[in-house]
Length: 322
Image (cartoon, rainbow, N blue to C red; front, top):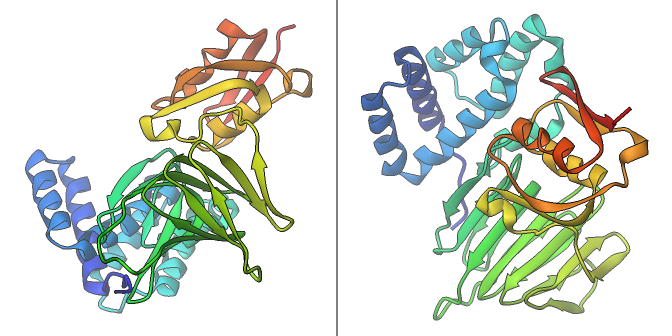
């Protein structure tokens, strides 16, 4: 069946839970009750994820007037359509902070997705067919299961899908990106949507690539990495980063350019993170934990001739040692 959006009633209940938890200081009793409500119905979990995702990405507590907007949403008797909610929250943001206007449009898109993660968040979801989907930081997916297919639409970000062959299952398991359609079979694979391409890595099993307007099928075998873009599909002989390590909370690099490494780390934090051109091509290999990106960056001067220049918590630049 097709995954439906949560009802206005479920969204309202999710907002009520968030307000109660915030006012109680995250009372353990209320936390347990909230968990029971979320697990009672799949619709409750979808509603909770949308409200939490919106709250985190807009950083409501830091925007004057946003708390009032959230309270207004909770008490409003109108149907909570996406456009109405965004208009109300947008007014509060404009009144309190112009920086909200610079937010990536993906944040707005993610609020309306069936499954989404905020910046720095990683989550696992059990799909209706039993498959396990893990979402990396700042990712959003729509679910469309019906009588003909099991379809995941990756709006942006990155997912890992662990699936198995289901007896008498005639519906293909598909992942759609801007660059093509991927069909998964018994195994595990990672799909990352970038601005100009899609990257696919298969850990176990195999994946079929279906290109728009092309009847041919390209197979990806276990251990292979591929890039899909407007020019076609291309196999990558090697990659500088373990594509699946994020599911374990790690970044694992192999002779990776410093600039590319920082681009990956920046996905897990807010604000600017970059480096000077003089050190962009420095190489590093190692295993880095993702729990605290700021602490991770402090390790760089221990292995490379660099220093960390930090103006604010939102602006960090890695520079060459003078």
